[in-house]
Image (cartoon, rainbow, N blue to C red; front, side, top):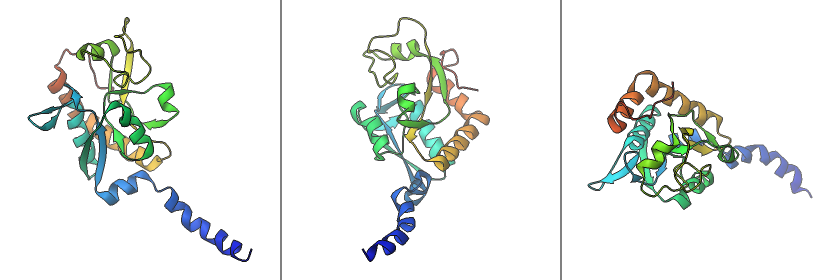
Amino acid sequence: MRFLPGLICLLPLLSPLAHAELIDDVNDRGELRIALEANTPPFNFKEDGNLAGFEVELGQMLANELDVRADFVITDATDLLTGVESGKYDIAINHIAETPALQDRFDFSEPYIRTDAQLIAQKDEEPRSILLVQSLTEEKPKAATTVNLAIPFQKGNPAFHVSLENALQRIKADGRLEALEKKWFGADSGLAPKP
């Protein structure tokens, strides 16, 4: 039992290592790991072997605002959110609707777009539950339901949350988000950046 006081003294030193803030990890790596599926134009897709789409450009802008590079990781619906939850990815930008069920598992950015769920479902021939993240059925919505698309990340990272929010607010405030929305969805798309 003689080692117990020494162990107790070490615990405060070990606890920061056990739960480092996500923004510190992002800055240390110099990159923001962004998970997406890359199969849902115009949100995110591959074109001539390169990633393209609204969310790809948004991810690049966010990484630039955080002064790191964007590291896009193409994954599938089964790994997308579990990968964020486990820390494999920092964020997912994959037209994910913030739902009460997901709020229990993740923290979210402010919405980057508010839209009619039906408009998103119509863009895909085969809607998947990840598109309107688990709050909607696999069928196309029958009534117009407004959804807020936001960026999930691991819970318990307040400094990262503030950094992400500040970056997103700068992109909104200077008109880049609105220009991006018009580029990829057109002026009369029904998709709109949240004010």
